Image (cartoon, rainbow, N blue to C red; front, side, top):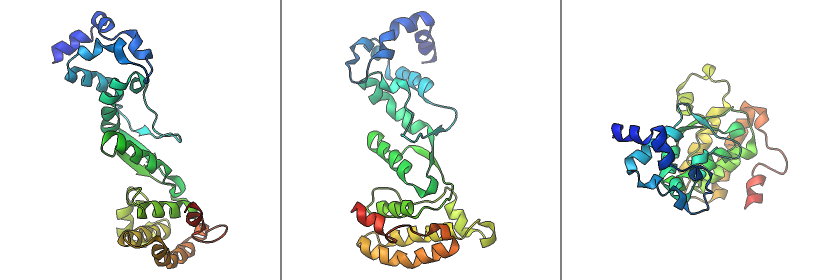
Length: 224
């Protein structure tokens, strides 16, 4: 395959195999102009996709979602063949600052496209925001997102001596997810009742966790 690939990647062969129109074709258009490219054996097409799509470093998720490379926008067939390589063979940095689960939801959305969760490195700034945490717990209870993991090292947080952890708050947050997980089959109102005592432990550990506005669970009640 190496010899065949080198021939295809020769500058003269490349211009005849992959027309320039391939690079400008809209994903919504017919891929007829790229028909010569699809005459290549699948293993060679996959090698080309990997050369273009796989990064040597982790890819940061933008606020608007995954920054997709232009190759995935060339035509439907290229996207169908290459999206799994891009999403499953790269690693993505997912930040959920202030415990906001929005980025995690974006990663999960890709699972529906490629069949598996993309490889991801999760990180948080541990800054408290109660409404975000409540939304995350609620979404986990509804099985819309994975079990909450406040940091990639959360299991280690629980095992470390208290004086090595910057605050007791991450431990309390972890306990909240454990309680929620054990009550997945119970109504959300019962989960709220079980979590309320932990909320008061949380704001004792860090007063910045205190709920603002109309009550502890008001934001979720408004979301329905």
